[in-house]
Image (cartoon, rainbow, N blue to C red; front, side, top):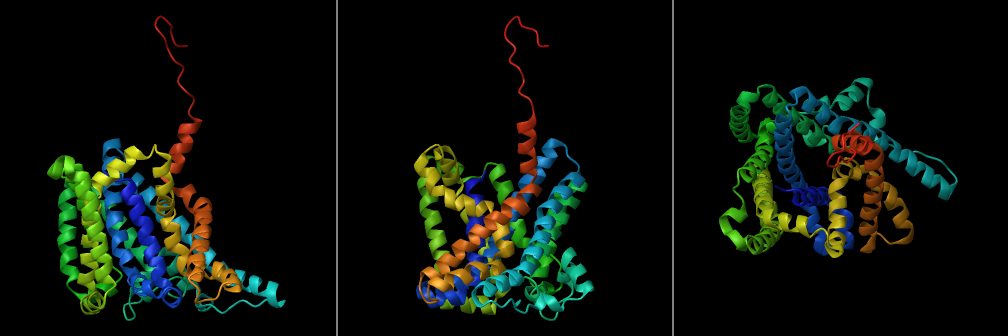
Length: 390
């Protein structure tokens, strides 16, 4: 099964989406990365695939533990909503922070205007519940939450995915059949462009379903190791490199751009399929790295990628607004067209996202509470031959 590859994959996907929102600064400072950054919206299909994989793993673990569907939904709710609510507060505080930073330089406090200042109470309720995703069919979901933070639309879709998996667990004997039916309906919906503007999850479901299928495929033993034996590691390393390089080269090319403009839905689905294939191919490499993590060199190489994976949700939630704070500092010391400008801005945002993750995301993770429970659990005294436990 996949562990390291999933963490690295979602970390890189979050970073790719981040670069998409910094396309202009990156293009001005590092021209040869402009097209790669401009293709960063493809990080979203990658996220959906990884989410599908993780949800199948969580669902199967819930079945093994004999947990109720309500327990599954409770932890999924905590995974999405509380960090999302805290991120809304952080986004609101960004212009205030910029105003304070400006006052330190000019002596005058002035909050930069922000679109969220025009939101009504009803708007805030829809944002708070993610129901805003159903209110903007004319302009598209990409802009449904743009007054506050454009990336929030994907959270609304993601939670709908969780509701489907919850329903599958509720109807446990029919779980697989229900997933197949929803996937067929999703493929049908994906063929109609207007379906993407309804706020419903169905046209996006096939990308999520690829992650579900990937988990089932690996869990059933259909791995590269089974097909290629001892050569699986070399096969995985080489093919993964080829797949990743070819994918980046195509989506950032003029041909890839034209294809996405003409067939955006198909383009996203293909990207999701490429991500699923890449993760499947990475299985032997994942297994090797898991065993090699005892090496200090391997840990040092993996650490920044695993850190990105750990904070990927926080980074994804906040990057589109939070980057303005480190950028306010960076521009005081580095010209905007210097390569260090976007790099330091990204690094500063990652640091802020890490702090947010520690304070506002980690306390709502199930493994956080399980780890705390294990630490509080008293050690079982050893019982030797002829010694009765008290």
